[in-house]
Length: 156
Image 1 (cartoon, rainbow, N blue to C red):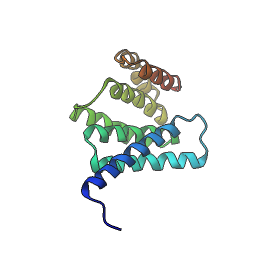
Image 2 (tube, helix red, strand yellow):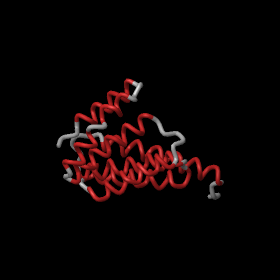
Image 3 (spheres, rainbow, N blue to C red):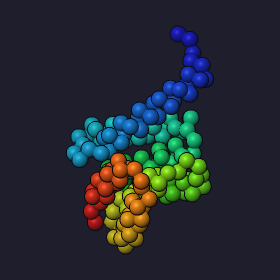
Image 4 (cartoon, rainbow, N blue to C red):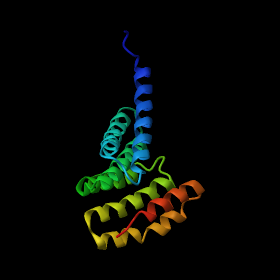
């Protein structure tokens, strides 16, 4: 079997980055995951980040870290969630090209979720105070609906 060309390898990385990303988000959105689904969610999030590290732009790297932070919140890994949340915040500030209102809104939600995972009520209150402003910047109805669903899942 012949080795793939560099272009083919790049296309494969992009393909698997997208597929793993989408699968991880689908699993992260489930209300009741099985242990096997939780394992698949974490593996897919890590795989997506790895594939994006090979072919992605800075915005893809930030979004991959956003997903990793979200997954860490889902499984109760507060320390790792904080690491990824802080990393995403720094990445979006350092490389603003391609950053959308959705990216900023999702980061605001992730910051609040991370504070909850850490059990830090004071920081959660400060983070949740920014949610209305983040939502107000969203013009897309589908993004607003997803934001509202994620926000409804925040409980202090």
